[in-house]
Image 1 (spheres, rainbow, N blue to C red):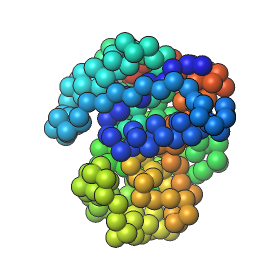
Image 2 (cartoon, one colour):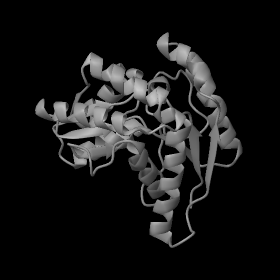
Image 3 (cartoon, rainbow, N blue to C red):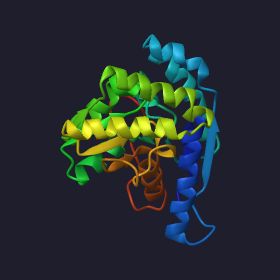
Length: 242
């Protein structure tokens, strides 16, 4: 089996991804069995200003330090359970120390497999307005729609003020459900939960649209690679060609 490296950026989403890898491994291999997994994280707070300034060299320097730690630990490949980080990955000027799975491509390929026509994109303000998801969905040939500006502000605030702080409230859940329902009336036929903390708040049972859970989709894709059920990734940052 291959050794999975989790390049964590936002803690709660990374923790959920780790647990889902363990559970997926056990479902495939039996109780208490799963691929080897190493998780490394640096605090992400220092990168917020760089994201706002589009200083992706600085963000990549931060992320590459963690990836090097994973390489030094013997990992065979990495995943980053943070959708926003992939804006920086796509802009990387030099290859990462390990190959990795691109979360936006994982979600877009699932949308294509599900025969979706137009997917509602929920994530941080950077994810909802940045180029990573539009590029991935264009590669997959699937339509994508971001929420309205006022809705984006609500979604982003809840992510950083609540979900990334371990806070889950019914009021915020209702706001997300309202936004997804409104986007359903606009013609969206699925909702991409493209901040890895959103699945802590929005579950398939309450969503007005079928969900594309970026956290769990990434975890399942990583386990398939680790078990030899999918090929090793070749992408090491820079524009994906998936």
